Length: 451
Image (cartoon, rainbow, N blue to C red; front, side):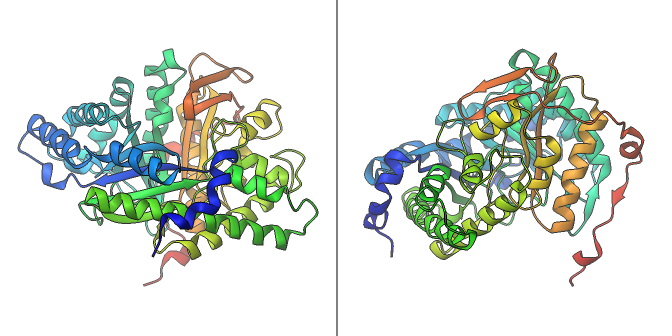
């Protein structure tokens, strides 16, 4: 049994080291909302989400006050909308607008699930749905979108990869007044998970219960602070300390998740162990790696240090929670991590190094600003590279890049809040267009055949 006394030892972490519950996310199934028309479906979706999640924000606020643990974000994820609008995909925007309206009514920061699962092939209704993504993201404030283009079992749908490069570029152009902000709400996955509480990639899987509570806990500052006390320890001892710290952090998340589910009449889903940074100083994954002995994140040794960190966090967290899921790793978003921002601004870390780092952590090339004139085929090639890492290594990978309209390498984009700011980073100029235009399916690796 967990009680509030289990988190007393975390008080200093909360007050001084940026420990928080990064998000309490309610997953809601929309399968019961399908009606004969798009308009009727949109109304049913709005009514259901507002009814199910009407107490989400006050409940999270009450728990935060009772336990003294900041709960930064309250969010909702829903069944992939492409499934709900399959009979009228060209009108999917009506459901998107209804979801954004519901998010505003509920007072949550983001709602995820304007999504499609096309990892083995793209049906006609899914092609029509994908085409609506740029306009929907440009016309909504809180709605997030994700598309799964590959998996270790099925391979990579390169036709979808090609389409997503064009969709990302169009989304940026439609939100050019805000530095391409729409792309910050769009993630392209390989091996997407159904219980992810983090945005912009959250959606409610069809195998989930009707209503579920998933919690994401974060404490990069706690880990960094703990490592300061063992500056000369070897890496075995450092890993052990990270494990113990992750255990304490996760216990807080487990307590909040179970109590939130109980009060909201929902099923407790999972605790996501991810270390999710913010632009605030003292809350950086990059600075953890530098505390381990790197002069600057991005130098040689960064991938090894990140692998150790990611593994230690998982080992400690798994012991502390009965249900671990989501992405559960160390996030390395550029715009949302002050250490990454500083390293990228100084030219000490490149997209190539970030890609290498994604081989050993969750979740991918995240919140990276690139030149606004980057061709769609180059964006597709970046997506393909990252999907290949996920497919071959049987892990979740993703791409969330922002081709900043009118900006070049050395310029900066700024989104504010948790989305932060980022320097525009260079991409390779070699043309991958012919490779991308080949289309088809990159077959799954031989080791995926496990039946």
